[in-house]
Image 1 (tube, rainbow, N blue to C red):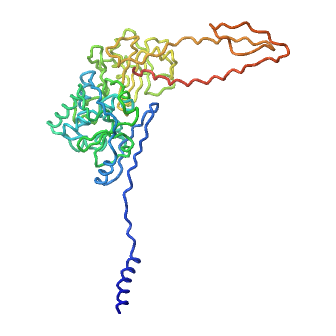
Image 2 (image 1 turned 45 degrees about the vertical axis):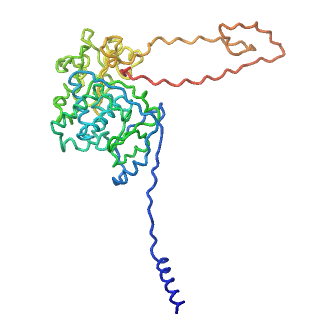
Image 3 (image 1 turned 90 degrees about the vertical axis):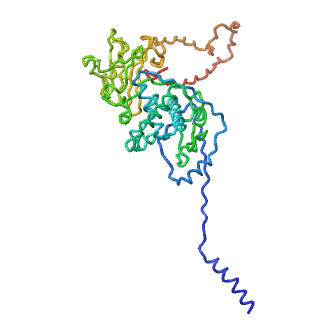
Length: 441
């Protein structure tokens, strides 16, 4: 009986364990950090906002597993805002909107966000205006760089007058030399309860409250990469009209101010309609203008003429020459025609970009930022010297070097066959990248 009882006491639990369903313990997959370093020759892409769908507590654990960079984190250079008065107000208000909607009414977080925006503006991968950086991609529902510009936040709520003034104060400080050192040269950030798909591929450099800040790995995240100048003319942003009166009005007249040499403004509305060119070059669409400028025209009015000519076009390219003989009938222009270009203006509203450039070899400007890149001189191509055909049976070989003393050629024995020296085939030199007309120095 004892043996039977012992068998039942051992066998029944063993039977239950062996026949019960197996419990599978799910382990969270480890965080894989992809550290692709973009080489200097390849400009890193700017990806739109895209988040991985994870619970906030899981996101915090994933973000905590990404280590901070052990490399130096130098502070960015101070920035000084320039340009016409209304353009400067546009810059301040765009930056104020960004710091308020991204960081709330928190001065520390706002300073960090402002520094990231200025870092982007100096980097070749981003637009060269404050408003252009803030509203980049905002015309697409999933392509914006800052979520408040495309998720309707600006329509759902507005800051109180006091909060808006505090945000403008932070923006004005950042645009007039104040540097927030903690974020260094960061170009990306996110809160710690979300996981953007790019976060593991960048260098995490610091945390400010609940925000994590990142920079590109390799050369593109170092100070020398932040070498682009400020465009100096801020675009008009219709979305800003509810917060900023300077963004109101007809875009024909307020999209970009035209600067005079003394910093004052030439209103495009003052350009008479009779001065606006109507013809474009052969084979071009209505967004391209090839124009001959009157030599008596004030160079300060070139930008106003371009803006008046472009009207309300979202994209417009205006190229002008003072020498009618150099104006091409169609594009692309020849190197000589590009070198003779007197003024160029390009507007690309989708990228938040508008830029006017003068040929500073023809017209003196108050700032080198307004100058086109100097084009190399174009001259006649020298014809190659004809090479004499060697006589039959003559010794051929490398051409003699100038400045090198040589012994007299020795007689060649008649019984010895002629010697032919094979010249190495020259490698083709890489094709130089053409410099876009009107690109700033």
